Length: 145
Image (cartoon, rainbow, N blue to C red; front, side, top):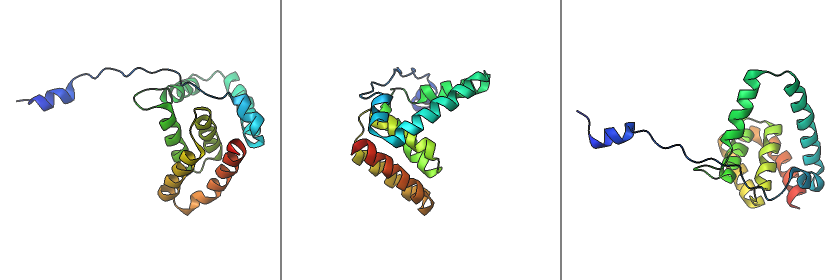
C-alpha cells in the first residue's frame, strides 16, 4: 500500500524554466581588462573552431549539455558558475578555472565570493589545489583590480 508521501515522491515534477543568464559584461570587456583572460578566450575560441570542424555529434551533445547546465534555473547561474569554479579547482583544470572565474565575473559575482568559493575548493581538494589557486588569484587580480 502506498502512502501519500510515497505518491508525492513518484509524482512527475514540472521542469524548471531555464533561460540564458543576463551577463553584465561581455567577453571582450573582460579581455580588455586582463591579459590572462584575453589569451585564454582567444585560445579557447581558436581550439573550439578546430573541434567544430570535426562535426562530431557526441562532442556537440556534450557542449549542449554543458551550455544548458549553466543556464538560469532553480539555481541562479551565478551559483552554478561558482560550483563550476570549485569543481574545476578540485580537478586542477586551469582552463576550467579561468572559464568559470570569467563567467562568474561577467554575471556580477564579486571577487570576495570567488575567493570564498576557492577556499571551499582548497579544503575539499587539499594542498594540491594551491598552484591552481595562485593562477586563479592572478586572474582575479587582473579582472577585479
